[in-house]
Image 1: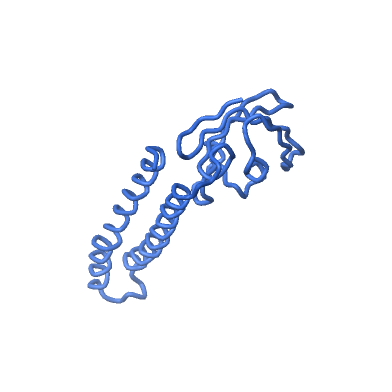
Image 2: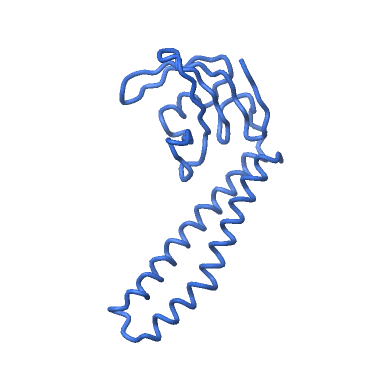
Length: 162
């Protein structure tokens, strides 16, 4: 497994550990304190702690799923030369003559401002399984974009250029 995958997994596992500590140690204390205050039907501290507990449980599940996705990708013999999960892709917009870098991420990590897109997005679908040197047409709300794939860096860290 490459350093890139290992770094991403380590960051996720560190966050999971931090969240589990809060979920298993800190929140039970807060809930116990809130219960000791009496009537739970009008206890804002209790409600807030229970809401946080639900959030943490869901976030831990999401991150655990994401770690397993990285494990799957790392162990699968997929074609590194093609755009897929974890790829960093530099494209040239043939109409606007501008370059954009996209990172293909899990849907819970999507952040268009940072160029993080999923394979289910219009651009992600158009780029999926494509290789360096290919031109693709993407249908977006503003019309069509013609993109040329200049560079792909695989999740394993291999770089392919046109």
